[in-house]
Image (cartoon, rainbow over all chains, first blue to last red; front, side):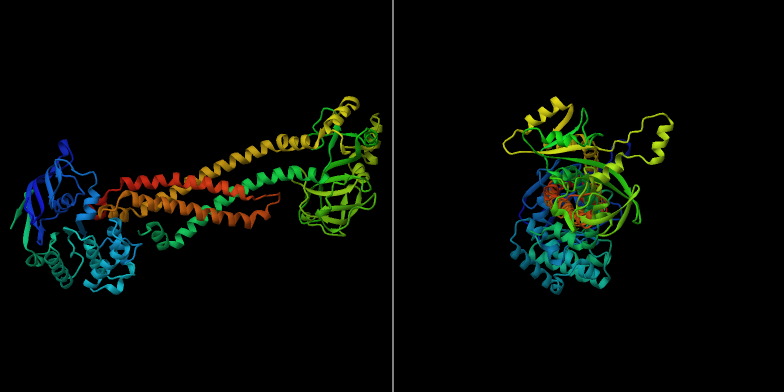
Length: 229
Length: 382
């Protein structure tokens, strides 16, 4: 595997149910995403975008195939690790359609939760979180609860949380769906900047064609297969 | 590391406090139940301790005077005095009465004793106002908890008594408040019949029993250097009486009289503890359900189960702890309102704390089960 490849999927198949109710959602999907690349994942609703994202994120087990994250092969017809959560915690950052922050933690605690779980010293985790908040221009909200922030601010905190563990990969599931066009473009530029500056591979699910020009490549699911435009 | 339990509790502090107070009231009732049991044991021994004698002489083959009825002749006290080793002996009577004059009738046990004798059933330290009985008739000393005060007049039987003293915390073995009257008054009250009743008996051809010189028990103290059990055995052998040492009388009261009631309370207490555990379990289950979204998010971003489980267990233990604190406050606020003695003891509270701690951890298993089986894809609606 080449060093520049951050995500590599070979012949991924995902089926739900069995017997008469068996449904194949992803069929023989193979693709790679390089470091520093922002890739859009586009498909109609129910085509399996989130399923694909969750398989790459080691949340959902594929039926068969191979998944490489960086230099590590994590799936080969079965999980090759007993601790997929550790892989998520150390290698992957997640951004969702809604911010999904923990409501009983303040902004900085939300951001430092994963790093602190990774045994990063509290002072170091806080300093990194503050630098991220400054980067997103919300450092004055560090000690506010999510309920005290606007939707856009919360989404920026969610992105900061995804970056807090210095991930190799960011999986974003419609991160701009809840934002207006101006905010969406701002978030897209931010993600592109992160991908470039921090050499992170980003796969972003989107329904919004206006966001596609900001992406390096466009990945589609057509007839259960993954294809690049 | 961030303490998730502390953060979650402080986020919903009001709800947590109200929940802990609710469970606390339940635990308070558990503490009160234990206190009622302790109170029964204390009550059972209180009068014995106040009388503080070595021997209880009662009617043959009875467990008198408290556990069974007993009737012996008053002059037996003089006979006992002649036995070597006996220091003093006095006659006592015990009779349940209902007094009127307060808003509600008051149940009391009347203790009849010789006010000029060597053995008094009144511990002077319990006398909080007035004086002891100084006349053979129509004076009484009464538990202040009855509501009667000094110089009040009370009608008992055919006579009117004046309250000359009040005591605090004096109860019979059954927990009834006490009224102390002279032996002569007590004998008349317990053993004399009305004129009409005597006439009735005569008309029926029955020989009216007009001997009122009966008592329920003779109590005695022993001179130093004499063996209590040997003297008791001597009286049993020659006088055809039952004789109990103070320890035996205590055993009769605590084992025979109180044991069944204590078992009943013990069972009730155990059920309450089980119910409390179930309620704590249900509360934690509900609290965990309310956090399923957050738990799923945490699992999704890679937080290990151990940290999430720690949060649930810590919250459960904290709920148990605060409920225990509230329970203690609640029980201490209300225990004096109970009509019978309730004794709250620190060792009982600590024992309950240990039980609640274990119960809380057991109860948290339902929440832990939900955490382990939580699906991280729920967080994103997958």
